[in-house]
Image 1 (cartoon, rainbow, N blue to C red):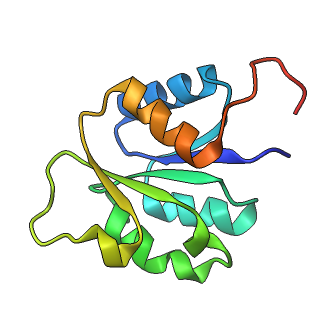
Image 2 (cartoon, rainbow, N blue to C red; image 1 turned 60 degrees about the vertical axis):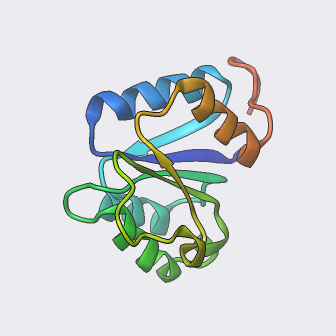
Length: 128
């Protein structure tokens, strides 16, 4: 099975928009609504090649997800882009090993991030 992009975003409209844009660009995508659901999914399936992670979510936010990613073997090596509507004061992404990007994010910028971390997508309808 080819690698995929994991979207962790509680806003349904944004999650669906990101999923559609990334899928249309030829990438495989899985999308969930919070960090807790993401950890459960990752414990039971193959790891993604890249994670797009919202900062503020119910049940488990982005920072809590990052703090717990060591619970799943290999997850600390997966690139993460943390999306935030406002840069939280005092948040230094360097020790977290993530990139922080402000919302709203342009779809072209989003696709460039995906391409940077995943390479070029597979043409829709191609064998996987």
